[in-house]
Length: 245
Image (cartoon, rainbow, N blue to C red; front, top):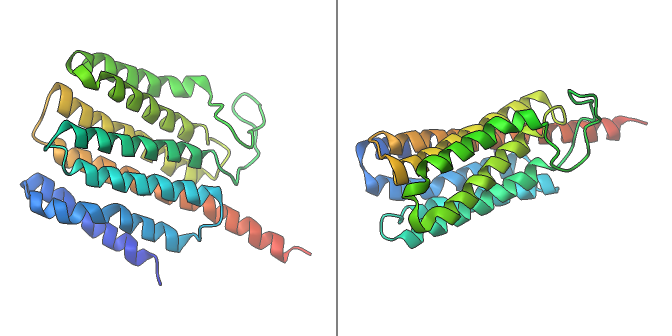
């Protein structure tokens, strides 16, 4: 089966979901939104057989994201649904952090001449500061309006910032295409979740729904494609090893 079929279906489902948000067609979103992550999972699964921790953690992140999508469909009914959805996405971000720590890695010197380590979160400090500063500014701005949600939202902000830092930490350890797509996806994910927080707790605005979904769906696609690009290097190395006498 050609995995691109699922990518095309994902694209169509994304457009329908975004349109349903913009047009206020809640019934359409209830039907389409639960299909989004399963289609992305199918594309990933049929593109790269699940053999290593890289694939397993990525699939787990997408699965928890699907859980968050479904739970947040009912967020307007009670705060409990929102907290459950937030928790599912938090677990998804933790899985992404683990996925970003997995090889194969390119062992190349970093900017300061250090050898890129095989594992571990050891980011270059100045690259992480803007992400952490943005997360801190967001929490500082909306803090007076969080109420009982102050602790869970703060924890979530810390985790998603850590996910972006983990994406930064892949610099010169993976192919440049993989690094660029994953980093762009992680940063757009931060923007998407920040838009949710801004709209829900601080200042609601009319275009929030479509803006959240456009950034969220783009982020998930970029991260998944970036992991696949990293995996393709693993496949190439294994092929070269098999052909080498």
